[in-house]
Image 1 (cartoon, rainbow, N blue to C red):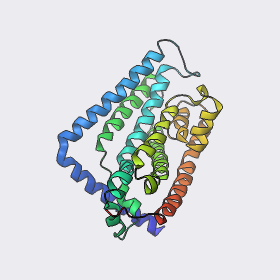
Image 2: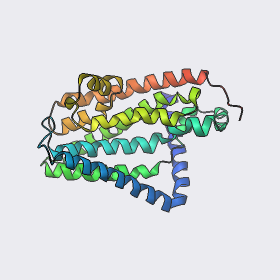
Image 3: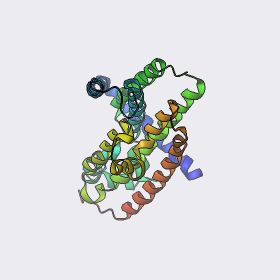
Length: 264
């Protein structure tokens, strides 16, 4: 337990240093946030177009879908904020020889890498997610209580942890291909399936996003709880996060033993 606490403190120390470095280029950060907002607004327009031709998706109306979308954006934004550097393990760390330097540090290399995340444009995701979540809660006449706020905060963090664990698992591809960005991105994009009610998909997709890559626990099951639908599944989210991180760390440590320097 003491080792976990120490690594957590180191992670936040690295993240704080990265934040200070990133804020040197404030205009670049602001422009990035705006671009993220525009991208998400395009997806919202797509959802709006879909609901021009139907009243509901598996019993979910337009405002409920937007609530699910907002909750998803919060977790995705937090995950991007904390784990974006995983995409760079292959192209920027291993291929360029920077990973050898990290191995010399008296700290686990994974902590050093994720602590160096600089995707602070993801704050745009979080801001937009909060706007949609609060607006839809009001429009759906869901009482915004202290308990609900704490649940949304807690399970959004858990959702980000689930995404981070999945990305960590697939980042090990960088030890062989040196291209972790494309591999992680390919699997990460599957979270878009969980932005909609999972019952609209076939059996394979349901199994994929609930068991194999459990993105449904990021926002779908929590949102169902906030809406008063099948609420018990939300409480499995922390268990899923713990299991995934256990697997991620074990697999990452195994992959680390197979590391061979590029000689750069």
